[in-house]
Image 1 (cartoon, helix red, strand yellow):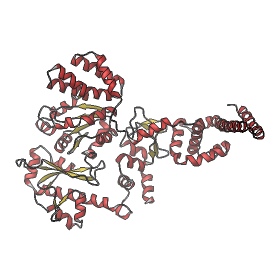
Image 2 (cartoon, helix red, strand yellow; image 1 turned 45 degrees about the horizontal axis):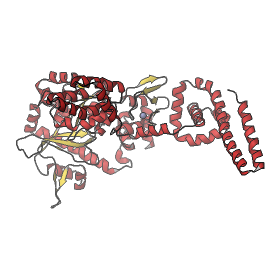
Image 3 (cartoon, helix red, strand yellow; image 1 turned 30 degrees about the horizontal axis):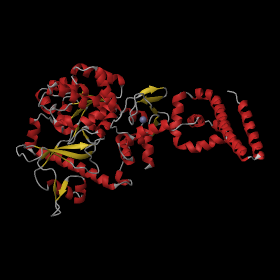
Length: 559
Ligand SMILES: [Zn+2]
């Protein structure tokens, strides 16, 4: 395995890999970006081409290119290796490596099922006819690997069982349902257009199946894979693999509700669209999208239940500093219909997007006429959203706007907003809690200087630094070993050229020695006080002598 790691690292450059996900800015010999792992306004995420690693000085995440792919794609080590091996053109045989076989088997089953559905679509005229009537092109069918599940109880099961998967595995993949009484399994998806849902890398994790005939009222229009080891609807985003590049490039994401909407949107060039499937928008969807862009445009049918169901997520998104805007479609239309009828209306609607708070306000004013009810609803629905905006200027912008719109003065509105600011139902990511801890833990001046010195040492490999600083720094070196990469990168960012660091090293060494002496003096003073309290004259003498010696050495150090 280490051979594969070596090969990957020799063929890929970390800056190339990272720039596929983030916009990198040049910063000296390094690159800088806003951290994809925590919420920040000023960039503290650095990539070092010379060291082939990255580090965020805000949340502390860092590592090499494999760690980066693990973290950003949410993959395990093997998964990240697989993605990178593919990119580097290094042969990668997961089976030959020791790994958790179950996940592999599940992925293979889902891949085989996708292939099975795809080939069945080419044999089924009514399914093809349905898709073309909805306006979906052959290219889109190929791109999204749309398929068809034949209308039979065991067609897919028989196919997969013949390929030596067992029933238990088919259940785990979410493709079949096991009948309690007979213990027999039957296909979950029957007579449906099949949309494979993939992870961000493009590996199938589940399906969404849509009926063709909607006349039978008791049949659900969409059936989705249930929660499985691979599929979690509160995180999965349909189309993410095809959209992530465009989301980064255009710096915005368009959210639609259904699979059809998504395919049609991509078909007319809205390739930054993703769809939540079979669930309301959750905070986990939003956190995943926030890694790619800060701008979310929600293009749901204005009347749909989805808009209401997404309220909580929108409020959360606002508090995370995401810019949430709405592109409400003409009443009663979904994006798929709208695009099919006239794609220009769709594109115009997207362009005319409005801020979520304006949208909520307009929505209340449209549906209520009684001024008192309007005020009540504003206070219940709009004020909480305003209070979640992280920026005071933004808040004041909306306070004035809302006050003018509903005819109240700004002061009482402000009071209401302020009252709500504290209890914010925020999801605190691990990164943010790390940051909070960092602020609380006071860092001594000595350890700050030691970190700087060791950073320069690890960056330049100049042994002189250790020799001149003495024993104590060598002890600290062992202790700080786990932070080697971070500290070296920090030195590189601070000084850019080793020459500049060397110019400062004398001062740092003196400061270090002085701080060591200061701590020693503090210790000796404590000893002196103790000896005095105990009335031990001999101990007092020796402690006093020690204090004097240390202060003398301190005086000799001149910066
Ligand atoms: Zn960070």
